[in-house]
Each structure stands twice: as C-alpha cells, then as structure tokens.
Length: 367
Length: 241
Image (cartoon, rainbow over all chains, first blue to last red; front, side):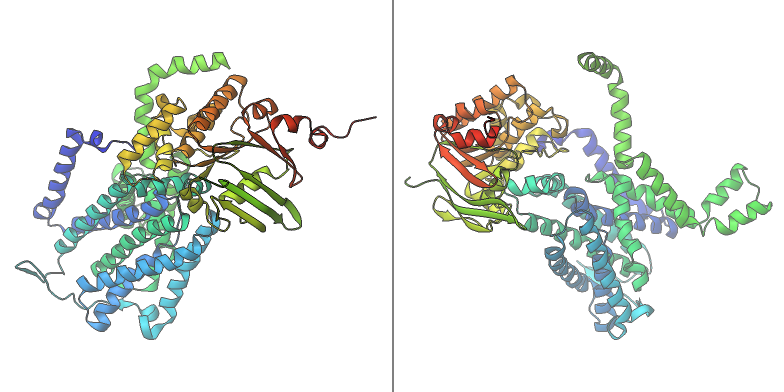
C-alpha cells in the first residue's frame, strides 16, 4: 500500500486504463460472435466473484470457502421473486443483495469467533446448509428441479426500453459495469482506513485487537461488502443463464471457484482476481470445448485416426475438471503468490540481479 | 488529576485449577514507571492480559482512572488510552513499517494523511523513519521491538504496558530502549514494564512489583526490592548451608 495517493497517478497507467475501458465498451460493436461475447461475460462474472471474495479473503485474511451461500442467495432470491412473484429483477436484485448482507452479518457474528481452519470449516458448513435447504424445501424453491426463467420483463433506462434479453449485449454491459464497480470498491477499500484495518486483521488478529480494532465489527464489514457483490454476481449469473438449481449455484465447487480465482491470480491485490479470471476462464473454456485435443492433432503430436487420438478426442473434454485441477495444483505449488506475484518476482528479480549480488556476499561475510 | 491512573484490586486468573494470578493488588500514579518482575511463569504476562482485556479476570477488578474496565474488549481498552506491546513481537509482516504505525494511529483518526503524519512522528521518535518503506516482516529483532513501541505509541496511550521490550537485544540496543522509555516518561505517559534485565529495571523503575507463582510477593522502591530477602530467595533459591 502506498501513500500519499497522489503519487500513484502516473500518466501511462491512466492512458492504458482509458484505452482498456474504451476497448471494452466498444467490443460488442465490433464483435458480434455470441460465443466471444459469452466468454467476455464469463470473464466479467469471474472478476466480480474474485474481487468480492478478495475483500474478505484477500485483505482481511478470512478464508471463506462458503461464498456459494451468498452467490446462491443472490441467484435464488432474484429468480424466485421474478418467477413466482413477478418482481422485475432490477428491484429483485436489491432485495436479494440486502437479504444476503443481512444473512452474512448473522453468520459472521457466529462464525468469526472461530479462527483459521475452524472458520474455513464453518463457512463450508453454512453454505451446505443453504444448499440442503434449497434442495429439500421443494414447495418454496422448486427443489432439485431448479428454477427456469421464462422471460425478463422490459427495462426502461432514460428514454430507451431494453427488451432484447435473448441477445448477450445487455448482459455484456451489465457485467462490465458490475465488474468495474467491484474493482472500484476494492480500490476504495485498499485506500482507506478499512483497508488498513482489514490487512492488520489478516496479518495478526491479536496485534490488531490490541491496537484498537474491533475484530467482530471489521470482519463483519468485510464480509458484508463481500456478500453484497457476491449476491450481485449470483443474481447476474441466474438472470444470464436463465436456469438455476442447487447443484449449479450452491455447491462447494462454486465456493472453491471464488477462492481459486484469487489464489491463482494473487491474493490481496486488485489486479489478482482479474489475472485469475484471465487465466481460469479461457482455460476452462478451452478444455470444455475440446480445443486441447484439436490442438494436439494440429501440432501433430497425436494423429486423430489412431486409437489414442480417438480416445483423447472422446475423453479429453470430459477430463477437463481433472486437467483444470492439476493445473491449479501446479500453480499453487510453484507460484505461491499467484500468477501476478510470480510475474512481479520475475521482473523485479531480473532488474535487481546486478546490484543484489554484492549485498548477498557482504551478508555472508558478516555471518 | 487525583487518584491513581490504574488500580488493580484482588485480581485472580485461573486456568482450570491453576492460579496464574492470585489476589494481586497494586496501583499506579500518573507519570510513573512501574517495574513488574518475577521468575518465569510468575504470571506477569497473564496480568498484562487481564489488564488489557485479552483475558477477563476470574476475580477482582481493574480500574483505569477510577472506571472499572474488566470485561471490556482489548480494542475498547485501547480506545480508553491503555496500550500494550507483546513479548513475542507481532509485526504486521506484509505491511510496511509506516503502515504498521499508521494502523496504530488510526485508532485516533479516520484520515489516512493525518495518520501517516502521526506515524512518521512516532517513527522519528524511535529513530526508524529511514525504515518507513521497508516491510515489517524483514526487520531485525532490535528494530522490530522499536517498531512495536512506535506502533503502540501511535495509539496515543496514557498508560503504556511494555512486555519485555529488551528481550533478546544486545547491550547497545537495550540502552536505546532504556533511553526511549525515559523519553516516554518525560512525555508524562505512565508505563508498566516487564523486564528480566535487573540492572535495567532497577534503573528505570520508580516502583517495582514482584510476582511469584501468580501472587504478589513484594512491592516497593527499587532499593527496597533488591534487599528484600523473599525476593532474593524467589530468584536464587534458599541459601545452601
């Protein structure tokens, strides 16, 4: 964390940021391929997820593996209100978010008494409770059948009415706006008293406590911010995909996904979840769409006609979870600070190599 | 301001059947340095924990400026103006030295720029301003101890509890800490100091409390304590004859 803030405003990064924003805003005008838009929307969704988890897990160091609870709440409440009560989602989303935040504070008040692995276990258990409720309270949630969205009512913004929710463009812009908002909120947290207090709690809870930081209050603030955007991402997912069931929005896999985005990219930084999303989304899409076996055939490592080739073609796509898992393990093993931290170390290591040498030798001499 | 700044009344702390503190009472006047000594396991750190809210005392009362504070959480105690350091230093390792001290300063302000200014002042006081941009996790032990003091001073305490800030330091570093403690005294900040270095504690303390097996064994001026037979026995054992 650097201070004062004014020092951070160099021209080059601002220009890069501006160009990036313009490119992202203009993207759907230039590219109409629905799959490309789909991947971009998934990217935005993943960024929102990662940045929301980052507030609690990254800055505050509370490794929740139960964010599926808030994700699922956001998705379920929004879609239930829309499907069963005809509440338009632009209102339903807010109800869902407020409910998720309220639930988060209740859960936080109980589970934040626990530290380290015990907190992690409690967070998993809480998410499982929500999954089981959604699964078994069939009269209320439709149970395992899930909720299929019929139609999103038209939205009026200013003088324009948006009705075309079959197209991906409205979701693209909504996702972009949400992702930008979560990034901005992370930036705001990092550059405020909250950020300092969150990180102090992450580094040493007892020291933080003795320095006047109320642990339950600040942990709950972090969780509330995190749950707010997590529920938001859940509602966005539900409305975009148009179908939710306990197996897609509430399982442990979803909770793990939140953590992975940050671990892969780099924990406790704003860019980390973005890098994580840029790694994970294309990777899982490539594996899912069988691009990997196509690549192997094209390079000529394996011929498509051989039995091995046929086997790979049939099974590699199914094994995407396995390959994904192995890659994640490799990243965790060899890049403990995430891809971003690894890249930083690589660069600073190269730059410092020459001046660092005499320093090391003098240290040896004195020891 | 009349009356003691801190009063400890019959404080006991039990862990299961073990009395880590038993019926300890004493009080401190504003501006003084109270030395707290005793063999290992005498209950010095437990008493710190009882005073600063990390443990609720099992029995007895802790009064800060006449207000009963046992049962308050450590953050509330800190806000009231009482702050402690840790025997085993607790730097916020992945934050810079300046950020560490700013976390302390933020107890009194919501503005980052004000906090940064206060923090730099404290760092200059412990002569660590040249380290402001370093990560706290990479400091050598002597500087970690001084950082700990700077950080706790940034919370602007009226009463400071120092838990073995000279532990593990060499003679020069210890001397620096002694000067620092005397400087703090000049600023009218009351201090309670746990220390094993007898020479140092006799030099800086106005009064000394000796704990042994959780009980208060003696209290008095440094001169009285060194000549107290019970204290000598507790430290060195019975004379062999």
